[in-house]
Image (cartoon, rainbow, N blue to C red; front, side, top):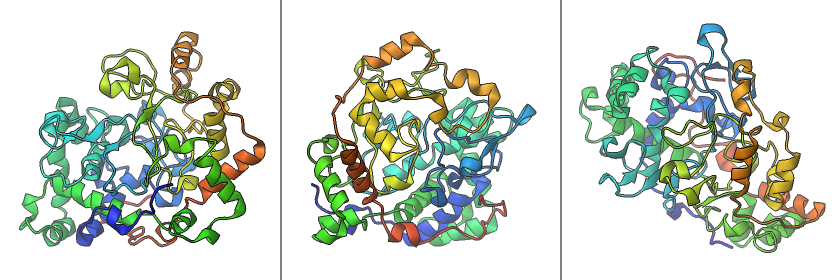
Length: 420
């Protein structure tokens, strides 16, 4: 088992910057059409996710399972290709790779400290991996930017990825309250005119890292020496997790993730993410980033703190319950054969139904995906499965969930409405 996490395992962030980041996180000013915030798909009431298998970004209304797709000329053109991951412990020092396919990592490939979709056009001055991550949803067409011709952000992105960030920064800094807060939070900012997307990203990262830091779960208490922190069933589940069930071979270390990529044969559906210029509706996973065949259909191992709160599970949210995803790990091909499209939590969008399960009904593509498996079947009893699920619930934190440092603001400087 790993050593317990402590405050020393996390990057130190400035609280003034985090307080500013809180407002930005909930403010729809950062979206192209001013109609969606970071919090829309990563809401604390929903475990910092959205409770959907594949969410609706730009063009939707509502929150979580109540979120609906608009119709007629405003209807969405595409679902978000992958499940919205939880935001727990993203400020950990050990973390070096983000996104389901790992397309953002700490690396000097482009001589700016990161290997990212922005390549050499990534802004300078981003303090952390989390700050680098924060700017990409803002320029993603179906997440927050919107469609070309709808707004100046989407139009700029269509030209080049970095063309929109200065426009967003100006949109924020001209709001008097934001201008003042940036001057107060950043020592090198003397006037609002100096604010760039870098300060916005660093503030968003500071907020997320402090707000959703979690290492006070019963499991963490057990690691610290309190054997009474776990129930008998959770202890049996722990023994399975680190023993016969072999979960810890991938969910390893203090973060309960090896940050590597594995093919586990989840039921495929949705538009997916594939290689550039690939005409197939499918999700090739890590291969979309690396362009190596051996990486096909492999996805990053998720961290497990607060996993009880972050369903549905898998890179596309294929399973709504912990029991479902556990059983899939034990028998991937058997569960794949039993899975049905009705299991997916997809907001109604009849005009997208033909695309939603095109891969699922493509026998040749399903056969290709079946060639890639990094886990082998393992027989466990129903009681064993129940104990494993019980152990996973012991990873749920307390203070970070019930009384986070900042919470949800009552209003934001732009005056735009909050998602509730």
